[in-house]
Image 1 (cartoon, rainbow, N blue to C red):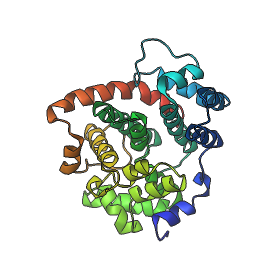
Image 2: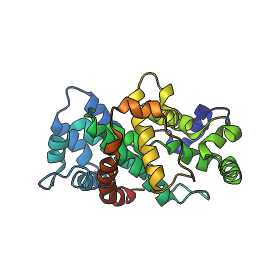
Image 3: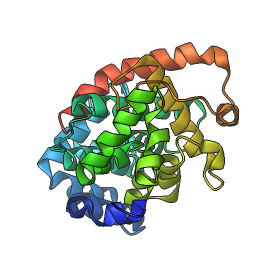
Image 4: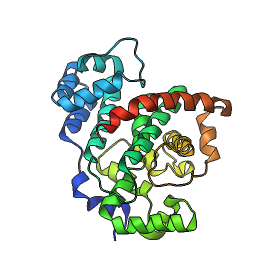
Length: 283
């Protein structure tokens, strides 16, 4: 049994690094000398990634008035950082395509996480937060730690699921009793190993206790609220049977009104219906 989330992650050799195309893309985006043409060239070298990104930018997530037919145009219209984050999302789904699990249907798992990402993006857009795609990635990856639990410790994972089922309690609260840590901690450790931005790591690591996130409270709060909205609607599942409790302080930090919830859900669900099938092709 792994002694810590970091130990569990370090033993998972198959996910020790992100795909080469994303690494090249990320390096280029962070280099002020890189041009839009350089970014487009890196993406275009990967035909599968190019096709997935074009389908995404032409989906209801963006609702552009005219079709975006080339990666060069997508880079210009969507933005380099935003397209980089979409590339990360599709790359991660592709990495975990063949994850086996006796506990959760993987299509249902990814539908839940995609829905959380889309809902987080809607919340961030309403708040006018910069780079809404960053919140999309955080929502999409919020339960990624559970995938490593499935693959690296299937017997302990089954034990945690059994405890939750037998006691009628939340799965994430049973994980520490079995593992000594929960899936949020494992997810944060994995994203740290991948050298992802601190705000995404915080969002994943604190999505069940957002008020504990000191450095990036909004990222954690948005991911937390998005997860609850999706759980309450039972859109897919990553293993939880019950809806986790709302952190009221996290909701208050967002500065949104309760009467906006129905519109938020309606907008998010329309985008989920359009985007989920596109992303599930990569999962």
